[in-house]
Figure 1: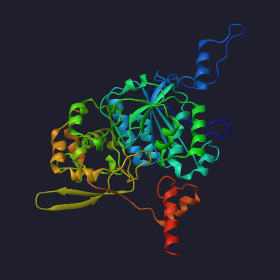
Figure 2: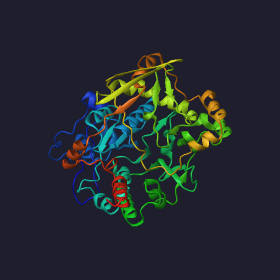
Figure 3: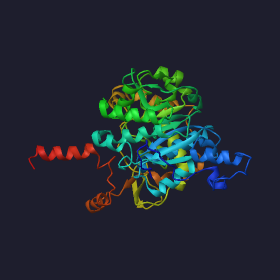
Figure 4: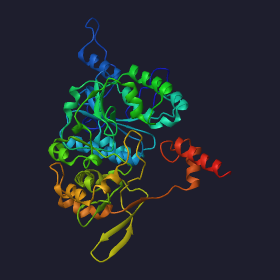
Length: 439
């Protein structure tokens, strides 16, 4: 929960995870008292530092004060965050991992996040005690943006790198922490701007307050956090494209990709279709790539290999119906069953300022798609034998639709899905449609 008060929002982790939680490490017990005349001893100093949040590393048992930060607004993006977290740890990062979540993330998925991330923080901009609440009332179209801005309140850390949950780490990117605020990668849609899927920043309550004020007065030219941040951080510093390589852009300049693609460290799955929304083929042990997405094959297969090996075994049993699809040469066999996995289809979060380019892929011909699919990549994680055994479990997933009664009950409990079906944009579109029809 968020603490209420006049000061900038202080957000607290659900619980400490990782080494301290499992090993029963140092706890914040009663304040130590020193003997008369001896002043403060070491235990008292450490207690004060931990309770005041001066070192996140000491409190979390991690020994660091820098972190990668991501955001999950629902269970779908939380699945993406889990894969991102595992990919960072698999590449031996020395930094903390912190994930901000909204109340829309289920308790079961939240528990899984606690097992991967050093810190899990709940952010609820609908809380009237949140300093972003009034700003949201003035700019309701920036709901997700105000949630993302909370990363500046993580002042336990001296420096952070924000990563969107639809990213994948393929090589260690820790050198990013040698850069200062605000460092990012040029946006391929308009290179004068930076893409806000990855940026280096310094947590600060003062910066957070000024960002809220800027949002109220200036808004965002693209309706999301990218437009807002670009007009606020006008003197940003550029870093190589390998730190935010847009997977869907690999076809735009194939010679450059062949030359530099092997240096990529962070891959970004922009666009409306996220990795967790693709189907996994049980026969090939690889992703069933739709037409127009073949250039993504190496990275989608890497994402799914991590998911199947490290995430899927722990995903709790949810109300999800699976249709297993076996593709043979002459026939299709379908059978349905219930399995312990949950993947939710969600709209892309509005942090991306880039047009869809699938039509461009088709216009450039199937030969380039085939080249990208068969050319291979040094970054691709091969499917392991145990992954093939469970590949059939994720061939096709659907989520049970919420009934009108359930939606009404959720509203009455004060739990609107303001980032999804109950978002400002959807409500406005519904009202506009009724007005146009004269209803």
